[in-house]
Image (cartoon, rainbow, N blue to C red; front, side):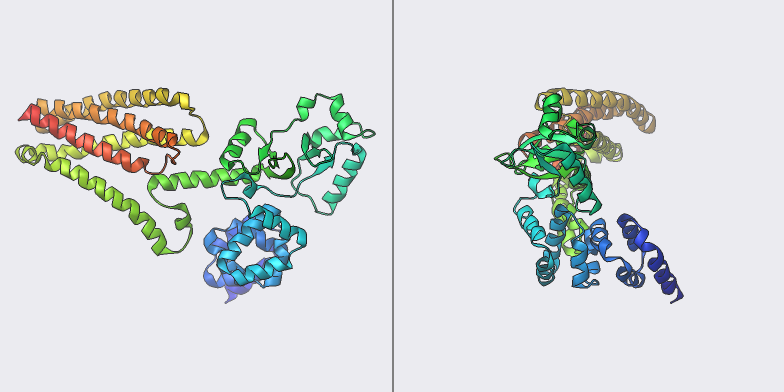
Length: 445
């Protein structure tokens, strides 16, 4: 009990000065009893930020311990994109609470949330925020700077790096960094300052609200952007996407890619629903079972050979294992490079050629090593030749399919990380067993 009192005093004194990520880290370390004590001590203005920093499985545990009015007050502190994400999560958890919280928001916040919810999760509009700093072309520069200072002091604007310039119809025309804005001539309008400089310098890289978020991510990487204005099909300025959101998207995509390669579902793994996660994993394990049966059928075709030469059963897993590992290396490199956009369509042949050469090179090296080991182990020179030839064949297949399968799936508009591992495992197992036992049948019997 004393521990709880110490925690209570600590939180009352220091938690208001902590960053939301620090509070989230603290919450994850607490036991259930301390967790329940901690939640009410979080200041209202930080609650929503903390929840967004926490894994999804904590969402219900936190919001159920917070008064609705406190949750509403905290939600008003968020930017529009985070508000939308929060409300969608809250709707899934408790529809009645979500409606009550939504009704308490300002009309402008409600309108922004409703607008952002109209976009699909793969569209840029779903990730943009409505808060931005813009001006008409003919506004005086001095007035623009004074307006920005007033909005910033009142905390109506945060994380602003660019001034977006529009015409009288709200159509985006230019983008000016705050650094450039400060060296403008304050006595003349923004457009006059722009015309006195190179207009190309103030032409922004623009994204469209219905554009794929993957394309937006690639533009941020390509041009090293900190912020991007988002326009609709009529070129009307509708929002912006900032680099912090892009970092989150990149991390989510990397996590999803790793999970897909392992045959698990990232959404299911984030939840505490063991049945759902188990069902998702069982699907891939079922596919792996089928591939294992296929490999066993190949082995069964050479049962007489295995009975005649027991050494084959001892050495056989080595061939399949080496092929599987070599294929995984090629697969991982190619899938990651595809995700980063480092492989263009014209690079497919070059990529496959590189991976095949690397695999054959390693195949020759380890074929020599394993051939010598097999000879010394079983005192059969030809057995060393068989495993050496088989290893070269299997590593060649590993490089070919490890690079070729994800490239083919990408061409078919299928996530290269999904299914590649199962296909590759099937190929390396079957080719490894077939080549090893087939060569053994021909050469040793």
